[in-house]
Image (cartoon, rainbow, N blue to C red; front, side):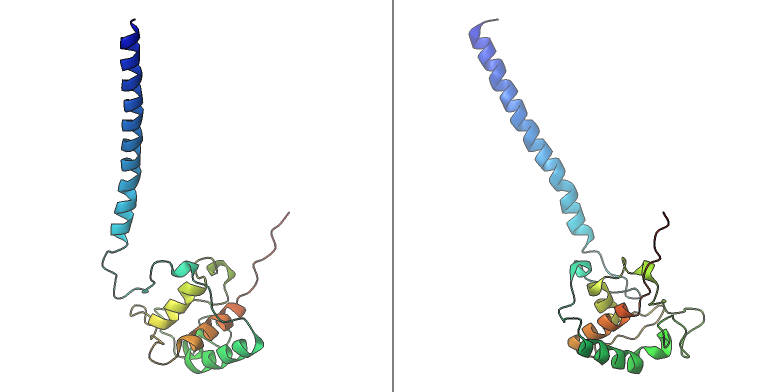
Length: 161
């Protein structure tokens, strides 16, 4: 094989590698574009209205005795009638067909980090009904309720060895 032909072969191989890299970059960007589009789908007005990134949002208030006491007072006033004294979803005003969640269940903690809890309280939902607290509580008060409801959770049982 001539030297000139080998050179052209190397150039073609390099170009092929470049084309391959460009094709790979394009292929990887298509799903990302698709994900961005799916996050803009129309929300279900009956369901929880949780914005993107809420699961990463941390409570901006420190968990102090004062914030826990304020959260408890607000919980008793606004939440206890449905969620119950101990947060087990057994309050006197519950709809038996749509019992509220047991806030003490430690297994629900992973699905309900601070930001998700905040927006569930803030926005409420229509089915099953939970009234939005955005017209009643300030954002600071809502974060205090988040602290208190998290404090109600039972610890996960120890893993068996």
